[in-house]
Length: 309
Image (cartoon, rainbow, N blue to C red; front, top):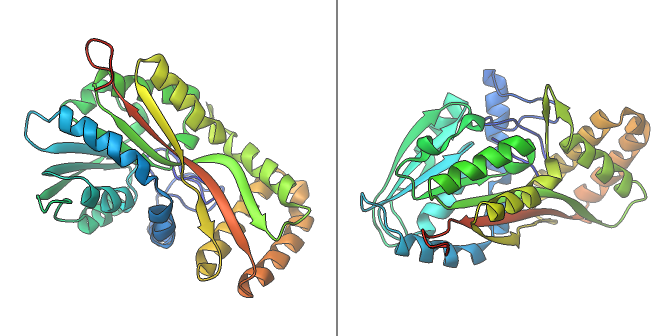
């Protein structure tokens, strides 16, 4: 589904190309998406909240799968960074079902998955191509866990409601990582930072076709929907912290963050060009720091008596 955080944007189930491109359809775009996802994966791994693993692992231990293995549906998997991060941190046999619209990204994700879990148990993989905005509870039959990275911000309110409802009806927990929350901190500060942030956030909340995207409001919206459906929800920050030694990612993120802001508010263009030149010089000199704020969310379903298991 999504990828967010002030980066190149993607729609449901696709990998994220440049700002303003909304689907991955050509070979060139797929290569672009894969290269971008590879570039950001180390920052994603550092940012993901390890605090959510304890309640998740406890839940999985108390609600074992009938098949004896943890069945994970990874939605909008891209090149598989969530699977590479999480599979090696969960104990026991695992079976991952990777969902994305793009067959080439699915191929890359499946090839890159680890073979073993935290305790050396086997990890197996299959792929499923399709539009994950159409996910229903029946699609999660037998699932132990639903995961996604940078997904929520490119959903509508109705899609978030349907997604949370599907998880709760399937009695399946959801671990939703790296959702954009609309805050960026840059050091040193620049007078244009605030305007660009506001324009970028408006771009994230844009109307795409008939779909009104939630953007930085999505994580809070999802938490409310899950709670309304009776789930127990944990939220934790998962910021990117970029600086010296990460110039390639910082420069790429900055360029496309500005591009999305200008796409939303074209009158910023001349000032944004000068801003980007200033920032690029600082980045090249190793003086620029950025904190790109995200949030992680874990929702656990309630037990039949009303208590989350």
